[in-house]
Image 1 (tube, rainbow, N blue to C red):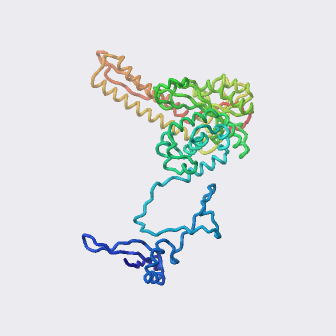
Image 2 (image 1 turned 30 degrees about the horizontal axis):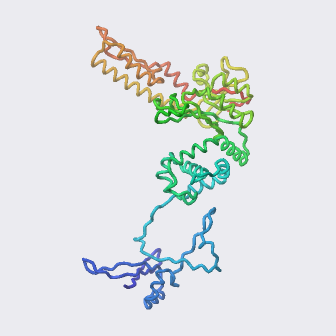
Image 3 (image 1 turned 90 degrees about the vertical axis):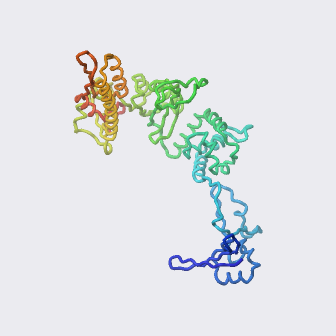
Length: 482
């Protein structure tokens, strides 16, 4: 064995490194192999090592004066420091030993995510959810407390994990949560996570009230402006033990699956205030009464402004809000725009709220006393609706051209079959069907032999004017349409 000096130049400065080498015999002859990299040593230290081979083991252990031991990394906030990091200079604990080795023989195993999980747990404790769930879910005979499992579920959702099965089988083992939460990897499985969801779900109202109180205390807000919307989630299977799982209007484009509807009340910032689960075949408008009453029972009959889309609106719901002295800002049916076609073409008396969005107050024929009507036109919404209509028109035209080629190739005596085929595509593209006309032509024998396709220019012009426009109704007393 011998020492070899290696010189490296960086930015005009020279550095010397020393390698401990040995000569080995191979099939191709003697070769030199690096045993260890000794780091940067000056000539005096290197000569001392060459003169005294007995000090070589001390050098490799980091105990030689030529090698400075590494300093300890300070503990992260929120974690108890280890014994070696907590000892002071007067303690008798020996200095930790370390050795130098070849980097080519060093590998990293089981890299784990830490930062996101640590931040999520810090927010969990800051919100006081650990103390709340410790009271709501006291420990029992379970090996892992339900409050700890609830924290795991919240951290997983914070880190954008989509399913409990994926958390149990893959994600948890790739994080440092086993040490942060004190939950062993072997104790995390999908059944435990699903049961924890059931346990936490029973305390929905307490959780919503707690979060609302935190939000109110921290930011001084008053929940007088709320948005209400209904969504749905579907299931696989029969769901025989869930009476609310029914087939209804599917927002997931899966009408064959059973589903439930979820009504969510949130603030303009997106903070959920309350939610209720309804049967999957429930009409959106029929859920408003229950939501309004639930909010009043929990938080009092405040003078709130309810914002809802046209799918929630019915005259019965409007009367309910008026009776409760609540204000509302809701959408109206598209048919109400017919009374304002000329106004949409007029460019005067519009107020620009932001770039691409203009509003103005209008009079609605047959409108309710005390209501105001706000006509809006959005350039971004218009571009989106025009693009949707264009795609429908192109799709419908392509199908009608195929039917025309089919009739020209083989004239059909069965007019009912031809009509069903045309009607099927018209039904799939209702917006385009309003401006595209398809007329069947017949030959001398009365057979359908061609399809005449044309556009209704008047209908198309009217549809184009209404793109991006919508009408809102409100009982608010402000005179500024913005």
